[in-house]
Figure 1: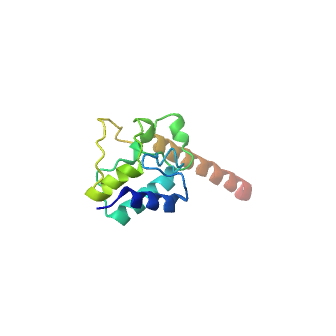
Figure 2: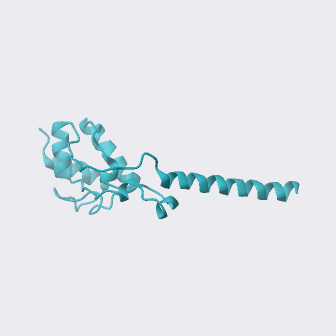
Figure 3: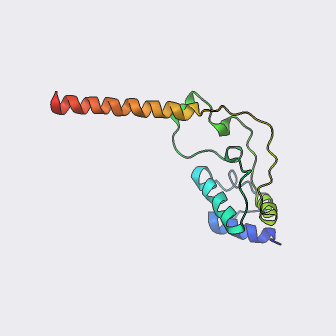
Length: 139
C-alpha cells in the first residue's frame, strides 16, 4: 500500500518544491503547467504503474507555447472547468493503479479549430517567405 508521504516525496523530488502538501494543487500551487505538468503525470504513471486510459489532460492543465488560434477558438482546456490534481489524489490512483477521476459530462468539437487556424497561418507565412526569397534572388 502506497502512503501519501511517498507521493509527497515523489512530487517534491520532481518539482524541487518544499511547499508540497497533501492537498496542493500541482498545477496551480506548484506552478507545474503545460508540458511540465503532462511530463509529471507521465512520470507518475510510469513509476506507479497507473493506467491513464481514462485521463483527460484538458481538465487538469493547459498546453505549452503560443496558440494564436486560441484567440478565436477555445482550446479544450478553456471549454471545461479545471479539476485540480493533488498528491492525495495521486496516492489513491497509485493504490488502485487507475486514473479514477469522474469527469463531468462535456462536449468538445471533433476538430481543433484553434490548431487548424495555427496551421493555416503557418502555411501562409511560409508562402510569403518563399515568395519574398524568390523575388529577392530570382526577381
